[in-house]
Image (cartoon, rainbow, N blue to C red; front, side, top):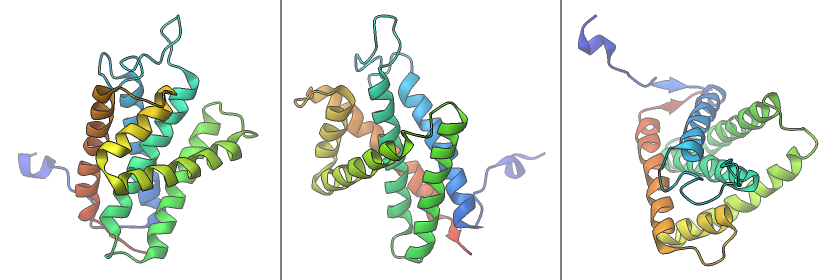
Length: 183
């Protein structure tokens, strides 16, 4: 096999449902990195969000998942705005969220509180969208406030989270720009 044949190429067309599933896998990969990235400042341990046994704080884990889902949602919105019908983008994002929620249940999250989690996701998305419209730094501040529960986040943590959001969104947007959504 030559180097040229081993190179990864994104599909040129994909259905919203298949892209939603692909995005859900990317969410879980990013989430895992975010939660457990060794000594990284943006890992929950780097934010000091662990209990006495060194286990990540459950509330912070959920907030991290919401943030990572939002970053992927935002990346998809930015990549497809003006070049894909709104209905196809909506189907993609619905498929992404459905896949993430189904994965949560399959991995032990009780179904009963899931609608409350979904409501919290919607509320955070609204706040994150508004903060991102202001500036990347404002977005970082809002994310860190929810992750830490501290209304006055430290500047270095805000910077680290802001950089992390850009790290997630940029390659995702680049990947998505080469894809056409089809029915």
